[in-house]
Length: 122
Length: 132
Image 1: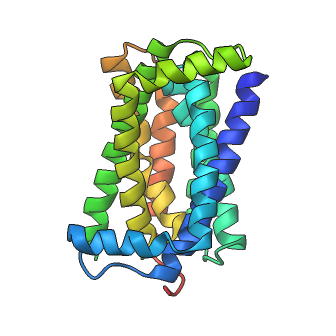
Image 2: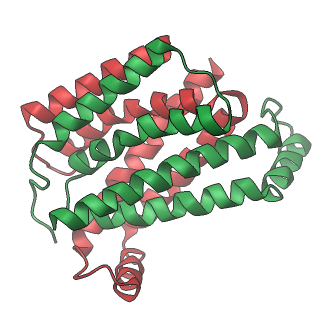
């Protein structure tokens, strides 16, 4: 029961954090190149976005749930189980970020979900 | 753009996989989190702060987050998130090789199915929304 609760916290806060960070990064736009100075400038601008801070806070919650899970469960169980966030993430990307989730993407997401069920059964 | 995306996805997978395995090893050294009394949590936090493997794991995961953020600045979340799932093949492999964690054939089958789904998602366009 405790493991299921912490897995739910991990999936929901981690995915919500990703969605917030994506929204912030889409506002910032892509860097012109990948030089360290350019990356540092992009990250500094990202930290001025409220969505970024919301994402960081949610990721911190997910991180502590992850650490707690790792203390009593193997990493090869926790990490694949957290792939449930693929389904939650696709729904969030469509509703919150207005991304076009095509049929092949949905198919891939459901294959991943089935794979996760197999991983848990194993 | 495609080469840059491929390189960053590879770095993202590597940092995420290595960071997760290092944290797994570190938390096993710290011990079980079952008691939630203030003294127990404080003692646990101190053990975590003094475990070098956890620091290296957290640093590696910070690198993962930076690479992930850069990818999200030009590609869809619903593309980047599945594209980075090759780590599901790498994490159990590292967990098995480094931490000697057991892996059943069914679990391996599930991991392969996840990777197949990820490959399917990878065939779709990288971006479906405008940036900025």
